[in-house]
Image (cartoon, rainbow, N blue to C red; front, side, top):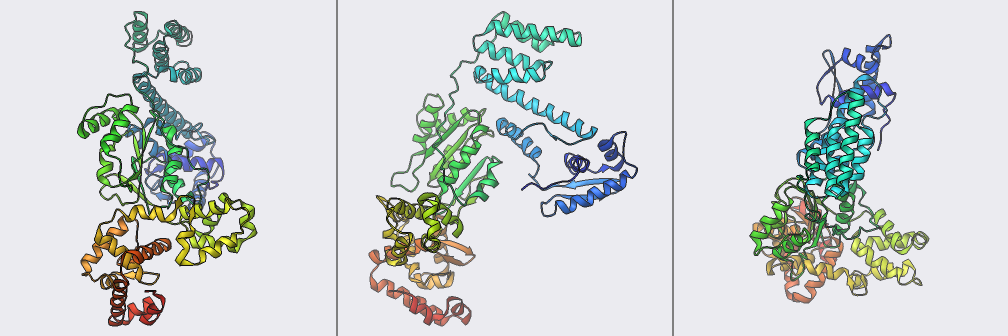
Length: 582
């Protein structure tokens, strides 16, 4: 959200403090920089007023205006300024990502000589980064891709010799030697007429190499530009906060985690399409099939990536990983690793140097992934759930039955996959009312059977995660569902599972790590509503009635033996006994 910042001179005051980087700017320098030779009679008082107003307008933003002896300074949270983000990208070699932050004239509309000096400095810095990025394009043989850009840049700054030399190189790479020589002739004419001097030694050397045909031309096609991103979803709903927090930045590694069906792939593809223009060397994408019975071998994935980059594929994982890192060392690519199994599968696929970024999705928490920004996706809010249904079914049908739509959303527990399946059923059955589906979903014992659209089911998505569990973890997943809905403490879970507290803790935390349990607080666990139903269904088929009854008895005995606090938390042993179905 944009905050109005008042008069143009007040904006100039704020801008001066921000670009000072936390340093104190003396009052006399502020007066000269804002008003130059025509300050108001009470300029110091006006500045004091600006500072007071800005403190109120910026409250809650993390930015504060501080008065220090002889001047003012601004404190700014790390990463809040796009200038800082720009320099971080440049330092990491992500030149296109840095330049994507440049939109229009820097400090546009900010008055005063000080702002004008900062504007000139910023434009020069941007020009330097543009030069560096074009150098990378020329080194990769992409001269033809930058001719139009360089022509426009020279039209704006005809005396900038570096861009002239780059345009000559780009034209020569494209087989246009005579055009390249004409650019030099034009540069020489303008420099002579405007400045009374000859071109500098760097431009003269480019001219000599073209004239004598000594210039080494990077072969076109030596660096293919893969564009492997699948289409982004058109109906992503309820993820504005996540997209907003990440779309304007490009961290080196982002890991999106969460249970099956929570929409990790949809968010990842949306982010990837936001970012793709910041990566001039292209995008790589792979479905790692991490929860399938046959997940992708990293060596095979690397072979595909290397072929997409135009390389010969060496034998073995170590050789392929080394060549992959070498090829990405001087490039800017976006790598999307969807549906990762674990850290071992992901690690060989990570670039070895800054410049490229990696976007990972996984049901498993990828602990130990150095430098990664972890984002856990959770269920949608009720209103977002209803909005998603409206996008699938049609806003008219949902608006006509708001209570029934709310009931369907509640039955789906905010899980995007479940909402999509439910919406698909309604969309394919125009004669059904929304209430008809909500009535079918009201019965918990058959809810998962109703969340089916053709061969696509919510239960199948859960089964992929469940089949990855070892025998002991699978038993814990099933038996914990014997407890009534709500939080279960570690002590209660240990009693129910008939395991020591430490062993129970390891089992439950492993289920949290793979997205089958939640832990809203230390020592407290619960299921997503649909996962609880799935766990009970698995228990019905895999555990005997005697095993489930024994687990229930242990849980009730625990509640009876525990101090009153836990019994009260659970609603008491009698209430628990009434809610549990053996």
